[in-house]
Length: 279
Image: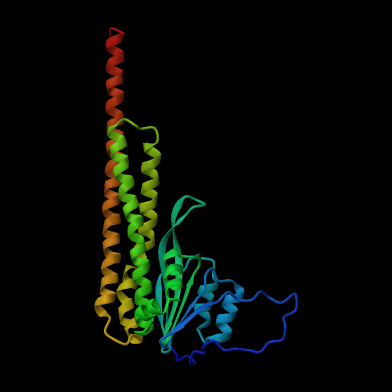
């Protein structure tokens, strides 16, 4: 790719008071510590994308991806001055009651990280809030943007395991209810847990290769060798995917068992009725 101009960092302007009809101010959150700037932008709109274009020389296609309401594929775009990464993480939507993927866009450069989730991601927001504390900031921001990027990815990878635990608990509950004769909602419950597994797998599967490739680019912006750290993230992603494959097999087995249990009970009831009727 062609070289891009140097990134402009947070240019300040002396502006006259805005008229009543002026566009809204961009919602930009910022932390500065140990020579590193972390900018966090949740649910970006036109104002935020315009701010990015005015203050940083990012490729127009990257800004187009940030602004798009359509889910982008997971990828790494590498330039001489920065990398642009698109990833997806599972998030439970209380409104729909479903597990769905949410997009996280990240710009990584020397001394700069910009995180842009399409929707708020609780663990990422919590990490950003924690770095207000000087001690917390020292833990994740003193080793360069490559290490901060690792800390962000590690936080988001860990966030998926409680969701996997809930799926496992649902599968165990379905098995218990199946053999205790509480069958009224089992078909619905099995269908729902299968859908959650499917949605999670659709989130992880396309980006496994992206996670494996992150180390090659992100280490450019680290102050020390972080190969083992990024390998650990890849291991977590692969472990989550393997659990989802296993849970899908378990869910299919639960469904087959439920059909067999119901069939046996129907046969038993028919025999009972036949005996009672003297047939």
